[in-house]
Length: 208
Image (cartoon, rainbow, N blue to C red):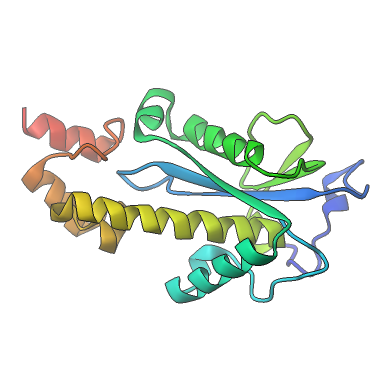
C-alpha cells in the first residue's frame, strides 16, 4: 500500500498530473448514534507545509487541536460542513455523508481543479473527483480535512453533553459504547439521536 511519500496523484489516471488546486475531503461521525455527520475540505499551501499531518484517528486530542489551528492559519482555504440528524434519518448515513462533503467543497473560498476524498465513494461535484481508500494516511490534504472534521465534531459533542448530560457525549462522542447504550436504555433517545440507527430504534421501541 502506498505511503504518503510514495503516493502521487498522477497514479489516479489521466489528467491528475496537470497543475491546479487540489482539495482533500474527509468526514467525521458516520458511526455514532447521535449528532450530525461532518465533512471538511482543505486546499493546502505548498509553500507553507504543515508538519505532522496524519489520519486524525492516530493523533491525540491535543495534537489534533494544535494541527487544526495550523491548518486554519496556513492552508490556502478550508471549510467544514455538516448534514443534520434529520437528513441522516431521511437520506441514510452514506447519502448524508456525501451531502456534507459536497457542502464542504462548495464552502471553499477558492475553487479547486480536482478533489480527492477519503474512502471509496465521491460526492457529486462540479469538478473531477477521486476516492482514495485510506487516503487520510496517504494524502496530506485529506489528512488535514480529517483533522478539521474530527476536531469540529468533538466540539459539537461537547455541546451535546451540556444539553443532554445524562448520555455522556463528552466521553464517547456518540459512539455505541456500553455506557452510551446503558444511558439509551435508561433514558430513551434524546433529540440528538439518529432514529434510523438500530440501537436507537430499539431503545425507542422499548419505551413505547
